[in-house]
Each structure stands twice: as structure tokens, then as C-alpha cells.
Image (cartoon, rainbow, N blue to C red; front, side):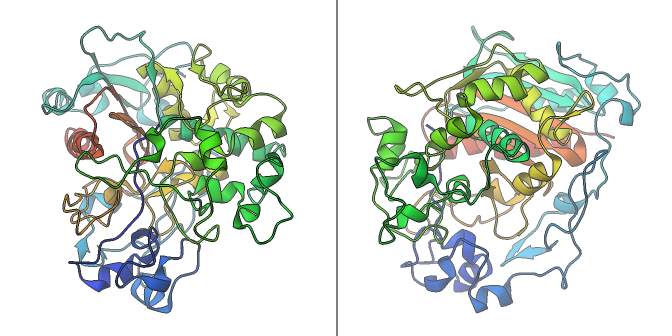
Length: 462
């Protein structure tokens, strides 16, 4: 299961320019929505109108990727001041790379948290302690926070557990597991074990899909399509409590089997629909290429290396790992995975996850379009923007926001249903982890992110 959004734009009561400006993101779920049509393509191609309306690198300064030793920098997309008619907040591009990451670059005793995290007073880490404590205590009647952890410059600045939950309690990841799967695929690609993102998935399920049947679009679905939720398979997944659109992720049955049985409703690569079924398709491609279960491979390549050997991961009845969910870890263990990405895939001098893969999968190349790619929520200024709760304006899942959040554009996060977050903000050298069991409704979980993530940044004094 996962927090979910099916990508859609309601233009029933909204200016058509917003559909044009962010055509790929906004119209992807249904080309039949008024005003969208050809702009619903989810691949790199856009309609002529969308190309004309979207800012280009020639029009605006470039954004460069976070930089640590060995990490490349370069043009990763436009730096707009507005997306459609929405102002981009000032914090989005307030700091330019390279960023100072980790203890040593920030004048603190150097160490790696392989054995465990070390803590310092929040003021030593550049926080106002009172502000930090106040914002991390944010709640509403529909929220049930169990753990909050804030790390800066490699040290714990704030840590609190609620009820029976403790530092040693492991929690279901839900869809945050997908972000671990992303890192694992990057490693397997770097090792040459997965040949390419263009690898067709049908070859791994020959009893379900026929690679030789060109009339069946499923024969053309690739790993890349599954990682960007553009398989074109029929799927509806809406976690909003006030929506009746449906949620296939909650229906009975094995997630992988359910998606393999789905018919195709769009050519692969042309339509994005948020789907937990799509990442489930990667179970066999990973296992058959690396020669062991995804869990065993992740344990060898990631978990044991960064000091979290005790994490658990569920499996299908077949014995294959549920790569879309089901990973259990403590708040501190989830934070280590976030720190691995904050440090650009490096751990104690070893490149664990290829740096170019991290750049590719966590940096949104189109600042007014991209919000979820390769199993990471990206471009948090837009992703955490205020969403309408009007079903006529936003019939399914996630729509272009009414306002943007005052969060750096380089921030990205792993997210799971019922309020799970691992937030990485390279420009501020910050990691935020939250574990919870909130009431149903993605709007409730987003309430926490919209309040606390910018609030933690507001608590920074230096």
C-alpha cells in the first residue's frame, strides 16, 4: 500500500493556461479532460503549446544539483519565478550548490552513523530549539504521530517518540519502500546486473504477458515505465478521504498478481497514473537479474553497509520481495537511508548508490511539471503545495496546487500512507523522519508535511 495520487488536472473551473503550462503533470491521468487532449503525454514530448508556455533554460537561470565530493553539477532544468499563475516561493532557489554536507564541512567532529547516530544541542546545529520543538509537535485531531527525528550536519537535533513507540520500535514503511527499491535498481544498473531501464518486463512473466504479441501494449512496458508509473495499465488509486474515485491498492489479492491481470488502457510511456501495482511489476526483474531476492540484495548492498542489518521486508506468497511496501525499520534506521542519499550515495568513503543515479532520480528536471519520478517525491515546493478539496476541480488524486510550499526545490522525500515521511533537504543538510498511524485520508498526511517541513526550515538560524 502507499500514499497515492493519480495524476490529473481538473480544468472544469480553472484557466486553461494552467493545463498548458504544466501539461505533462496536470493532464496525464486523462487526455479526455477539457482543455488537455494531446498535452497529456507523459514522456519528454510536449504539445507545441506546452513547449511555448513552459520556461526554458534560455529564459531562466539553471538549477544545479547538490554537490559533494564526486557529485556532478550541471543544468537540471529551469529556474522559474512563476509556474503558470502561481508564484514560486523565495526559499525554492535561495541557496545554490555546492552545499556543505556532513559534520566536517560544517565545523563539527566528523563521524559516520554506521553504529548509531550522535546527538547535539539543536543550537549547535543552527536551530532555534524552542521553534524546532514547537513545530515538530504539530498535530491535528486526525494525526497520530509516533516518532519524529530531525538531523542536521550528521547529528540528531531533535528526537521524540509517543505512546508505546520507542527508539527501537520498527514501523511499516508502506510506500517508502519504493524509494529503497529505487536505490537498489540504481546499484544493479551500475553493476551491469540489470541491463537497462529499457528492459521489457514481459520477459519476466512469460505465462502472463506475451512479448511477441505486438497488438498488446503490455508487451512494450519497460522498467522505466514501471518506475515512472507510465505503464498504461488500468488502475485507480485515490487515498483522499472525501473522494469516491476508488482505490485498487486496497482491493483484496496479491499486488503483483492484480497488476499482471490488468488490461492496458494507454500506450506505455504516454500516461501517468499513480499506482502501487506498477512498482510491484519489478519484483521478478530485480530477483532474476541479481540472482537473489530483492531483500537479500538490498541487505548486502545497502542495509549491512550503512548499519541497519536488522530491517525486515515482506514477501509475496512466491517468496519474492514486496518491493512496493512492507519494509520495517526504526526511525533512526530510516534516517540512515535518507543520509545515504543526502551524502550523494557515499558511505564511509564507499560509493554505495551511484551518484549519477541519485541526480537522475531525485532532481526534477522540469520545475513546473515534475513531482514524482523513479519512486521519489521531488520538487517539494510544488508537491507540498496546497491542494483543492473540490472534487469538481480535482476529480482524482493530485492536481496542480493553488499555492506552492516555501521549501527548497532540491528537497525530495520518500512517503508512505498513514503519514510516513523521510525528507532530504541537501541545501540545508537536513533530514526529517516521521512515523505515524494517522487516520485515513492523504489530505491529512499532507497537512503534516505542509506545516512541519517548512516549519523546521523556519527554525534554522544559521
